[in-house]
Length: 525
Image (tube, rainbow, N blue to C red; front, side):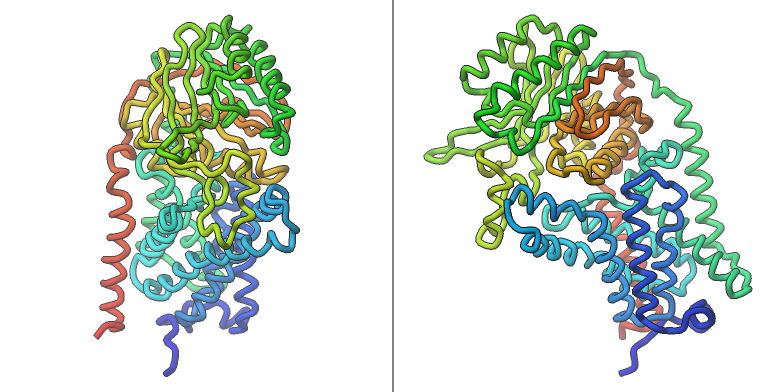
């Protein structure tokens, strides 16, 4: 049976004139697009964010559904292999296996992630050629991003919208529709520019409602952003915070021989920060390499050194609980005061697969070396805020900062401040630390809350409620950041209100639209 190609391909496809129909050229264009997107997500090149998908769109034109799926897969392979290249180093270095063996799980990860662009490319085949195709395709793209961020515990790492994270004006609309809306309008702009470029090459006029609406949405988003960045969020309260970045090497972090040295280093930096009289001092994820809940010699020393500290302290430490004959371990963040002792704690809920627990252990037993001597963690029992004397705090531990729904839940529980503690030493000297920090910026804007990020080896920093990076450290350096932060009043954003309905909107709207398109094309009898 003859495969069906896009309707009107002969009228719309610039390849007919410029590049012919060779699939290898289209694969190269899709790969180029994937590389460009990885580049813009790992650096600050905002103009490229509006152009990176154009070669991919060009490669898809005029192809059958099967061909498009292959092109989408090619895009995904190029994109995710260059975006997440650091995974190989993490597995080889901390799993203590040869790089050639480390490539195998990396290839499996990339192949899995590439399925989502391939799915989009298939949806492209169903939706192209109809009025408002740019709108429909933007919805299809966001739909596949949401699936990636949800299925199999989710991996919403570096979605399209994060390419604008360092441009405050462009991301203010995140308090309405979150990161997915940023991805939506950024995709739409890429599509509109592609259609204009294609029409110029073919010497055709392109002015359709789709282009007009994309321009209108983009203009309104920019105007909204310009108005918002002039606002201080109505802040009525200010607190001083101190951030400690101790820069402890991962390979010695859990070595018992270095426990005293590690604790001594963190305490020395804390003493220096305390001279500025901060209300809260923050240490990184699992900052102390022992169980704080046990009355060990190390804990006694730590508490004694903190007796003169007039600040509250937020720090990470592993924790455990006896359940029958077994012991369950938690990745915990504590809120502590020298005057009042332990105030509160939160156990991490969303754990990192292969980093904090090992699924399919019989296949990936070497990941146990990455987890370390403690063993696998288990999720906490509930999402909860830390009740500080100075503010209600949403504590996000490492990986949790990439999931918009987690900070949203904590904001709706009364959080006034987001604190993200992490240990990005795992990533080495790669772009992963930059990517991770970029995603935290959107959590501040979505919830209109300031965010403090404390990382063992960087990047640590302070982000205000408008997504502006007020202060930041570099990677792999000792650092102390002390800054006065304004706390805005607790007002729910539109994103906070509609967030529970976003998954249904993302799923149902494209489904309804696609069903209508399929029926119209006569692909269903």
